[in-house]
Image 1: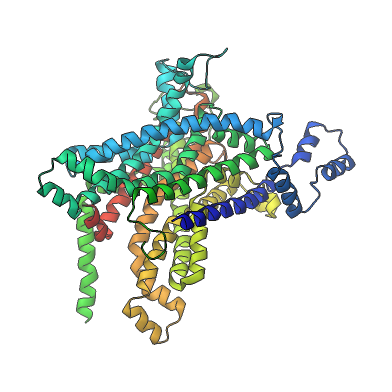
Image 2: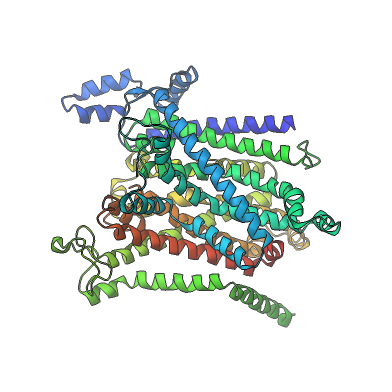
Amino acid sequence: MTRYLLDRAVQSVAVLAIMSVVIFWLMGLMPGDLIDLMISADPRLTPEDAARLRELHGLDLPISERYLNWLTAALSGDLGFSRLFAMPVLEAVLPALGNTVLLLGISFVLAVAIAFLSGIAAAMNQHRKLDYAINLLAFAAISIPSFWLALMMITLFSVTLGWLPASGTESVGGGGFLDKARFLVLPVLTLTIVSFGSHTRFVRASMIETLRQDYIRTARAKGAGEGRVVFRHALRNALIPVVTILALDFGFLFSGALIIETIFAYPGMGKLIFDAIMGNDYNLALVTLLFATALTLFCNLAADLAYAWLDPRISYTGDGA
Amino acid sequence: MTAAATAAPASSARHAWRRFARHRLALASVLVLALLCLLAFSAPLFELALGTDSERVNLFSRLAPPSAQAFLGTDELGRDMFLRLLEGGQVSLLVGLTAAVAAAVIGTFIGLVAGYFGGRFDAFLMRFTDGIIALPLLPLLIVLAAIDLDKLGIPAAIANSENISLYRIILIVALVGWTTVARLVRGAALSIREREYVQAAKVQGAGSWRIMRVHILPNLISPIIVATTLSVGNIILLESVLSFLGLGIQPPIPSWGNLLTNAQALISTAPLLAFYPGFLILLTVLAFNFLGDGLQDALDPRAVRRRA
């Protein structure tokens, strides 16, 4: 068990290392480098100046050497300087990370809660009207373009009704807890809607599968009530595959956050990645992309851990599973 | 022998059709998709009939309400919204279908090779697939969409051609979208290669490629079709969000995604401009998902029994 998790952890670190090379290489393929930007900012720069600056910043070196230089600096804690924010990259990343964790955390909990309620309700009423209605809603949620939903939310709640703010995190001049909460409502609502659909379908499928097992029939036969059968006997077993899928879905949730943060001008990691790439801030883009990758890999690892913890039948020694 | 061999597929096709027809939403989806395709690709006819085209700017009738001339009104430059939606639909549908098929081809190839040869080769390919699945997709797609084609050594004549954003988005989506099909095909190939008839073919001296093509692939057609149909919706969503962010299909080529980019700025004055393209995306993606679900029930009866 420990051995298995250790293997998986090593694997995740390896994927992260490979991704750092790939992303570094991709950043080198972005239009315009630091020096091009300096030239466009100051047309008096001569080609000789440019060559000298390139040498100064180590940009004349082959990409493998540049990567090693970056890696040594990064591992010693120097992640570089953000051109866009005029501050060290880490100082720009940390507050954004906090904002994103808040947005993702609330949306995730809400989406999972809705998914469990509706998924179980659908499974208990299979092939009845309620089941069809829930299925239809889940399909609609899976199929809705998140950016369009965000725009429609703004149109309805901010422009037409004027109930909620359309962008940012707090009123000008700062506000209290309630003020900040008001700014979170629309982004959280949008993200919850676009992510609960697939979760609901997984919960429903897993629950139906579990309810057909022999031990459920036994539980019913000995006279346990339907509620007890579902919540005491079936739920824990139905949970196992669902938990894995929920954690594996983190990459999707993060992609949703990128779109929603960008539209609602919510200063989180997703918007930071987008702004960094669009603003040619390659130091920042590199680090934020790696952060996002690391976060996703970590969630996958957590899924494995939860899987093992929830299901004692599973052994990772190689012969049992 | 011939009678039995020909009768079997015909009746199984009839069974499949009966199962599919029971799925009323899937049937409705076929109609909706057929109608959407018909409308989108008859855009030139509408242009002819209305005596205008999707790119004609008319600054005297900006943001005009719906009329007999412009069924859905006009946009901020006085262009006919109905025609632009049709043209955008052509692009979005074309990109969705082409990229889905391309991704399915890549996935089938990788899955088949990994499943058939097995061993270290399989382990390596599957670790690679897991790695791709574990990545945060959209941020990486944005990077891929933003890279400078000059620096990749692509000739300027191609890099600056009008349709480059179209080819580029199809390529990018196909490059990351093959994983589902690859896993599916690999799992099936792994079990089919142990069957007696495959062993028999091997003993008779059939080469690896022939076995994969003649004995394994035909058994996998149904699940591949289902997975591909289900992926079209996702791909249309990806294309539209990238185009919306300004990184996918580039104007002047309209797509449902980039029609929304302009509409966002006008959301308080002309909210309907933002409503139409998104609603069409929702309708199309929903239809593809229902269709995929119906096909799954029809073509993969084992899955039905598991779920019903």
